[in-house]
Length: 65
Image (cartoon, rainbow, N blue to C red; front, side, top):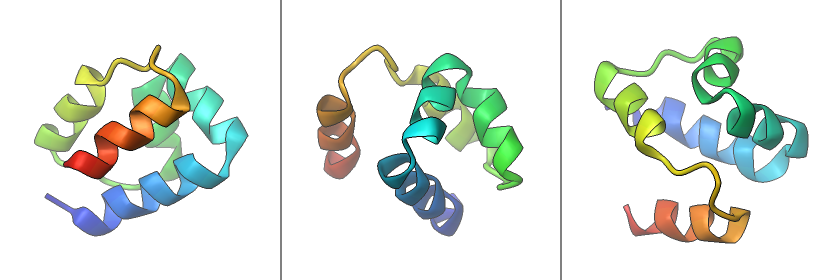
């Protein structure tokens, strides 16, 4: 896994409301637009997230991994 890319995504997600909205609407498209490269495993994890959860729930789940 490319932890550096995931860290950059998490930082941007937590600090950029427009990016958060884009990820909720189209996770793969929003991430592709960042130019960061994620592995197939990481992309599968992104697809498995329930983006309907609140920001607080998503942050809590991310901090458990």
